[in-house]
Amino acid sequence: MQTAPNAVICMASPPCPARHWVIGDVHGCASSLLHLVSRLPKEDRLILCGDVINRGPDIRYCMELAWSLVQSGRAVWLCGNHESDLVSALEQQSPQDQRFLAGCDTYRQLGDLTCRRWLRRLANLPTLYKGEGWIATHAGLDPESWLPNLNIRTPFWQAYDGRFGDVIIGHTPGRSVRRHQHIVLIDTGACYGGNLSAYCPETGAVVSVPGSYPHPPRPGLRDASVSLC
Image (tube, rainbow, N blue to C red; front, side, top):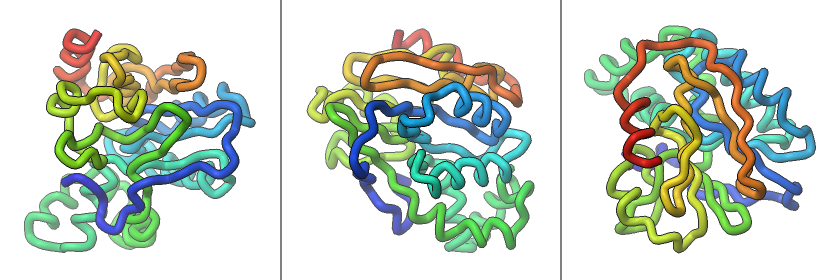
């Protein structure tokens, strides 16, 4: 699945703030998100790089916090594959979708009614944010269409030639924020015992806080660091 149903592809900023901070996959680590936001300048814009939901201990509060930042004009919440998959399952309701929902952390924590109240918001999350000389999206761009793909990894990493400037992505956890040519990977595994990190594309600065809900470590946390550093 490449984009959420009916999703807005691109979010262009209103009059640009001095700086942006692109935040990696939060995955329900609400206390970490609150801590990280408190450390970032209030005049700067925040870009949540998708996968705000699932896995962590307090998904509902995490979603409410993210949405309050959006409503205040401080943040943009990009769609990740976890938001897209939840939207698809809620809309299509096939037996396969029912099985997906039964195993979905967000669905279990919020329940069917609350998830459906969130459906329109999640279905209309943008999938890409354009800055000056950089863009942010959840996982990368399809090398054939150069549109956002919410699940892509290696084909994008191998093909991207810098045509849009730096592309800042989450989706693939690693031990630190790391660069692969014109790609900056900012998912530092908050829900796997790592950190939640924010990256400033204007300055290259990184601010990180501890994750708040360590899942068992996954191979991707190791592999991404080895293959891309």
